[in-house]
Image (tube, rainbow, N blue to C red):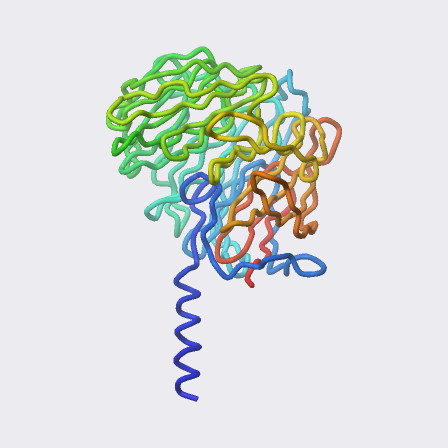
Length: 432
């Protein structure tokens, strides 16, 4: 009996030790990898068990989960009529809010809000997932309002208004570049003359460096890449990929990559010595670092019948294969080494324009959260797409191209999935 109790306690302690946080967009390393174990191999009949839900309002921002707390942002409209017109800005007023919930119960712990007037297309709400680091929450709103809050209490520690501080022009679809913590810096895409890229002291908000004038800032978040032992920060604006030194923001190298409509959206992904980036309008490139060379060379560039050209969801790379949802609403598998298309499938996206599914890898299986509000467990490899199970878990309350959608990247933490729409945030167990 004693031996059983000891072994049971050890198993439980091991299980808790393996629980992981989801502190920012696309996970701990922004690569769509979820490393927790003891996860279901298929969804139970009737779908995963709902643990809780809490009311929130509109937004595209995904949640972040750290140390038993969930952080998410929304927008409450007070005046104006929003219109999802891709070529027209809507003028509406209201307030943006940053919420903190208990991850186990859904009980609200705190909320911080500020007035905000929107002048963007698709004015649903905030786009950027909060970034949580060292007891602070960093949130960037649709109109460029950056807040640093105490993660435990919600107390405002410092803030910056990009429009006022840098005379920045808000992009057509708002600020979408999730803030990046790198060492003691918070690195953001701000805009304005010589302020496309900025770095703040993450503790005090002091501006540490800024630089680079660009015609259009785009929507892509700053990304950490590595050339041997050297770390670089890679930005993608509407004309090129731009790598800078994280110490001072000075340019290291750049490569032309011009998506249609200035829609530089997806974060470049690195696998070994290769970096892949793609966007709409048939724009894709794979770059390769050579040992001892400061900047990469072009390994291949996408053509009409190669690569994957993604829009809303960043592709992920595993075992030499790129998996991504293209603008035509098709999931494609592409060879990382050559750009050759291996297969394509419409099961996740329905073959609709900008059909979106957010892929997250757990071991050798993938959890795909579809714009329909469905969660799908599937296997992806170089030969095929194989669906294991699916279940509807949240209502698609948004709208795009005349159909109902939910375009928000979920969080995977504490052996759960945390999802939101324009009415609620909900938590479902994925524990085995």
